[in-house]
Amino acid sequence: MIDKINIRVYAIYINENQEIMALDEGYAGQKLIKLPGGGLEFGEGTLECLHREFAEELNLKINIVEHFYTQEDFLVSRFRKNEQLLTIYYKVDILNLDELQILDESIEKIKWISLHEENPLELPIDQIVFQKLKEKLL
Image (tube, helix red, strand yellow):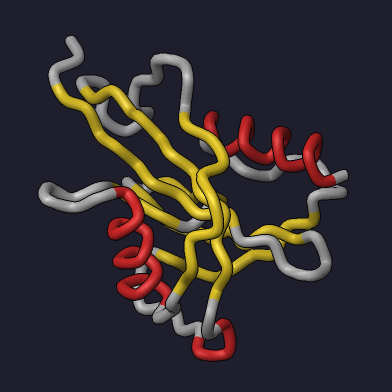
């Protein structure tokens, strides 16, 4: 039975080579390749969430460029079967990429994924976003 909702906020950063930033991360005992971002905390707006996640996890400051996509379909968390997910994606610019430092021990490394390659992202809505990016940019 679904009795919780988990709001997730993710960022899309595209570099000059048409590559998106992704994280190679361990979560709940599984390895994932996913977009940067995380869970909304109580008393926090979606934009504040992204600023906090980038600062806490990657030592980065960002500028929110625009809203890109909000999940449209019902989705149950793959990690918690009683939790419904709602995911929101924003395009961002990174203001201090040269200061990138992985601060979250669950993040193994940063990956740069070309929009010209097959979709390696593992979360279902990340996969939709990757396809939408390809359609808009290529």
